[in-house]
Figure 1: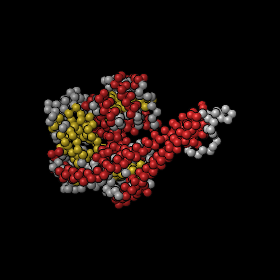
Figure 2: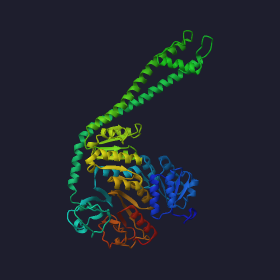
Figure 3: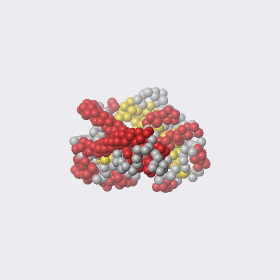
Figure 4: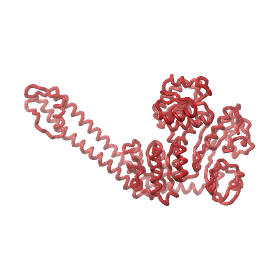
Length: 590
């Protein structure tokens, strides 16, 4: 086993969370040497890393001494997926300063910050987990099997087709490349089958091909355009709702201003009374007496405990002002507080009222960073969405309401809250909280309420644990169980190792990646043919180094790779990483 001091060209992963663990597992599975730096992460994840035999350093990756201990000067890449943007930003700047030659990949949720850092660290070096994972959740919610890809300047499509007559894939679909076959008899999914595979009526085949290969896409495009036109009046109505909600936000700010003004007057009064008030025996007010008098004056109670008849004229004038200001500010504060409470209650009630009239909407449960991205994407598709969120102080709720989205505050595992969201009329449900158990409970509650409609309504569950996800799919027959870390991790791994990930998508429960690999003169792919690749890898197209603007597709099995060629590949991420590993090591691929 290689010691840390002997490692060279290894990958340093900073941050041991769900995504970090997936990255470590994939790098380790691809044969890469990995060093993990983490400062007090979950012990459960640390035990998994130790089981893999991966070196784990406890410490703050933003300290140069820790990076030096991890062999930063000899490393090939650094991946930073800390939980906080500020930590990732600090680390990125430090790595760029001490090891500019190292390939850097960093997670940043703030798009503006990400663009700024990307200019410093390079194209493709800044990624956002939520943005990478959201499209897969959206596609599952919409029941969309078609996916559009841009490869080398040409448009390709991934789509599903049902086999109508017994045949082999070559005669049934011509040059369209089969990615997966789901047998109608319930058998296991067949990944990247050969074109000579015989398929039967009812089998579902996932295919990829250029835009010109799909001559029947026009009706779909026209239908989508018609749907967009139908939604325009609704968007106009919701613009007015956004204006009202911005007014609500202004009222809340006014409440804090009123409170600050009242507090300032009170503090000033206490100070003046402590310094200048003379009692019957020339005693001065203490803090408690001054505060007591100020509060009873501001609240207009006036018990008559203190008299100003024999005080300085200016102090009597101050008492007059205090009574006037107090009555005014307290009245304003009470009004703002009442307005705030009523507004929040009205907003919650409004969400429930709107839900009763909604039909064909998507219920989004759990409005975190992933949930917000999914919400934005669904709105871009002009779909009606209703948010069901447990935490009324969720920081993303304001953004949802600003988009005119109805929000219901409540526990999603309770039937009455799901019924309040008008589940019986919904077209899809996305359960996206960060708690696996809560998602499973909610999914089962939704499934129970849907009854016979469960076959037609997609219920998309976010579940981290892959083994648990498999058990849920098998035993409870959920068809759309997704993991944000499984969707996002390959992008980080690919960027760190030199494989450009272009897209991720699911076929049933199998995640697929589309990536681009540049063949090097000394790499393992030079001179090899398509047939030398793993049986579970499909080469979609090749851009030759002599003519990079023209794509060669579909390539024949005897087509050979040449130095400088750009190969566009699709397959399970484990297979793509294995191809990349062989290319880097100059080993035979097969």
